[in-house]
Image (tube, rainbow, N blue to C red):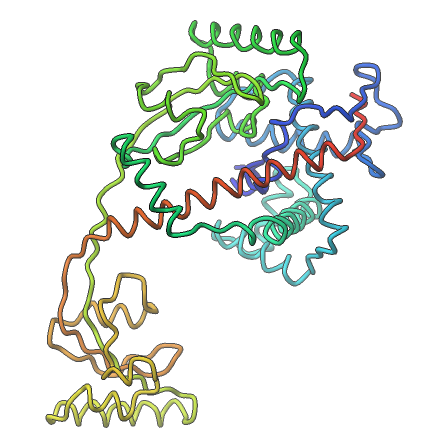
Amino acid sequence: MTHPYLSVTCFTFGLLLASVLGVSGSAHSADNNILLDGIVAVVNDDIITTTELDAEVQRVNQELRRRNTQAPAVDILQKQVLERLVNRRIQLQTAKRANIVVDDETLNRALTNIASESNLTLSQFRQVLVRDGISFEQFRENIRDEITLNRFYQRQIDSRVSVSDADIAAFLETQQTQGNISIEYQLGHILIAIPENASAKEVTAAREKAEVIAKRLAEGADFAETAVAESDGSAALDGGNLNWRAANALPTLFAPVVPSMNKGDISKVIKSTSGFHLVKLLDTRDSDTQIVKQTLAGHILIANRDRSKEEALKFAQEIHQRINDGEDFAVMAKEHSDDLGSGKEGGNLGWVNPGATVAPFEKAMDELAAGEMSKPVESQFGWHLIHVDNRRDFDMTETMKKNRARDTLRQRRIEEERLAELRRLRDDSYVELRI
């Protein structure tokens, strides 16, 4: 069985942007289907070899089989994969110049995490890769590259992207005027790209190709397989699947079209500056109202910091007994709690959302009835005496809307900035394709 961690989708966003760009104006093509000295591309002062290309094509083929998607003709798949490799190489070269290095300790932690998500040890995971014909050493370096590019974009772009409260308010107001914003859409996408400063002839040819594809789809051609074979979009090798998008997170180009479509519908050809698009509505869903059960709670923390674990437990038990004998919980918290923040408030934590506290604390808190106090509960912070005052169902919908809006705006801006950066890097690079 091929594990999902071998999927091409494990690459960073930057890697997945590759095929949307097409071949830049700086690229020069040699005679078709001629490989010189095993080199399929020259990227600035580096090369991509036939071996590298073949290995990546093999991996993509495995992923397509895992998703039960028919692979396109070999030459078409090679073109898609080579574009991805070229853009990846350009980004890695830029990251290297920025002195971004991923040490072996960080890399080994990442690999261990990947293995554990499949309930495997690192040794077992390595055996799975070998069994599936994939070099562990190459997989390891691919993960190093992924971490490198994540760090590069986080430093160069992501850390500079911000969203203000005014941005969120304006965004939600705009979305509200467009109707139900709780609907989410799963989209398929095919892009027939045109180069920057395309001639009228190139634009016409791209439009005609898009119209031919639209006709084939209308006659029953499989959308995912067509996307793999024909699309220049970032999700081409994922069958064009853009995954779930909230109504307020639809690309601006598709926002006027998608809400009026029914499941299974394919749009007419949509033109943009990057080319001609076809969108399929794969599915819809309605996001639920966010009602959470909150607990009004307080605690007294007796930390192990200045005493042994046994001494801390004994002291917590003494305080527990004194409160049971009639002393006030809030007074004891002010006098003895090692959580200074809540201690000065009489131990009051306010209304606590699920998941806001460490697991042992939350488990003990959830088992208490209103008005009850726990026996000493151990966590990594020490021993807690937990008191539950009340519980309520609280509507978090507005808060969640604001949080989603912030995430949506931030992600949208990051995607736009990353795409612009990759286009700039590609335009500034020397690329020679030899296939």
